Image 1 (cartoon, rainbow, N blue to C red):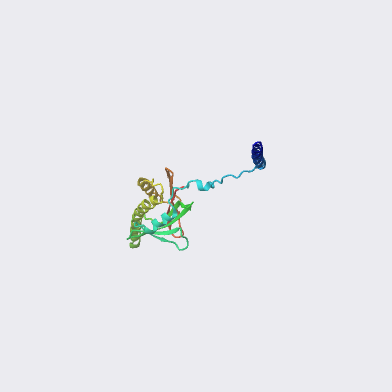
Image 2 (tube, helix red, strand yellow):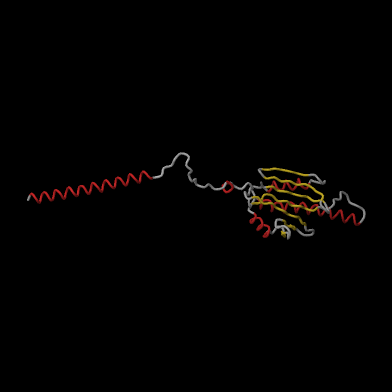
Length: 223
């Protein structure tokens, strides 16, 4: 009986020693892992989260519509016809009305993919201030008067349709365009000009001597 108890006690002590040894090994292994864990020292380089380029976060600085929208508008316009130039994809010949029909040259500029300005050049005939005596002079006088009326009609019809189509914000007023047309028609000499800025929209009109005849040039800025 005593021999049995002694053997059991020995077994218990042996088990306790094994458990204690296993626990000591476990604790030592944990301590070693903690010792080799890398730590961040002052001045160490850290990987920063990349930020998007500044250009991607900024809004467009122009009020103009996207170029694709504008070219689609020109291709489908029913007020005037627009024929693209073969030498420059951003140049068009506009034709309005009949008897007489009026032509104008259009060129536009783009900023950040959106329309930033348009320039329209209207050719002008020589003006006659009084009726003449010969048949040729009478014809020229009549033609000049008709051209003057046609120009005013063309200016308003084209600009009142074209300028709002350029405006992505849809804030341009028809009354402003009418005022710009009226002031443009008052320009009678080469070098005379009219300029107006209204709520961020800038309009410039001036008369210039072209290669063949005088021209009325209208520029609309959307920046």
